[in-house]
Image (cartoon, rainbow, N blue to C red; front, side, top):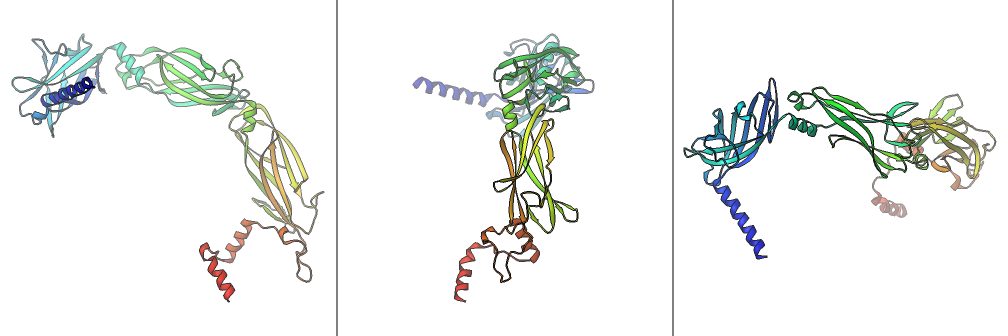
Length: 448
């Protein structure tokens, strides 16, 4: 414990002593200029440039926040600065920003970078040339600049296409019968391209799956001043060696061992594919006695309408044109099935609409009756019910006899919330919005 406290105390004292007498480099910009283009790095110059500039932000030592005497920069052969003839930088601009902050702009002679891999700059002040701070910067040759270019690559316009007989579609979720995958992306022109001549690099494409890693493609590409558009080969989804089990997969592109693009997707089994098919809406289209079609009706009147049709919307997360989907639609009046329709369609699109056969009033099983008919439209896919909608059919007869008595139980009266709201709105009636006043209304009724 004592040794640990002593180490911490020594480190704190060293930091305070260094800050008392030496400066601190807050930021550094190495600007390399070639003709009308320039590139700025924080730790290196590009050796192929024609002109070099250095910008530094320095915080002065605590004991000398305002350095009154002149500042200077020299290039030393090593970081210790123990040489007899360092290279002085004459073109220097110094600006004091207050509170000990200093901005230094310098033009670095081009001959100082010849045959060097590193540059050691020393900032000094005063006639005694006391060292204020030091900074070490690298000079990038052609090979090192190529490596920096690869490190800066970021693929854009990432697209994963699903290719089959229906064309090319975006691949979010796929199945074995969906077709093939085609990755596509663009490598934009890098800012290093003006300083580095075109060169060849190796691009690899891998598949990361729950079963492991598989290399799909390996090819050389040329990196230069122009953007590179890459489109990979087709990857068949029915290849069991690559797609052996459902789960989350990724296509990963690399250049020089560095990842530049990633394309995730989901691989579904045949059972999961059918299970994820959804029916978000069943819309009822009513046909009036005068031949007009009215969509979105849930309450039908025997005197006004003569039939209705159900329009079903089907959505799927994946496309598999070779997969046939068994679909069955039932129209029931309670437990009795009035109409059944079997439909089989290919899964060749993300969304489709299916219109069922019309249900005519007066058909067998749907005859006039004194009570309202509550019909249900249900749709099952592969034996699983996906959606259900209700339809109310009001009878044509009077609901009371000549004495004003109901001809059937009051519980059998249909009630449609939407139709009731529309009637109240048309009449201009205001519903009571504050439920806390219900007791006082009841009390006033009893007392009146």
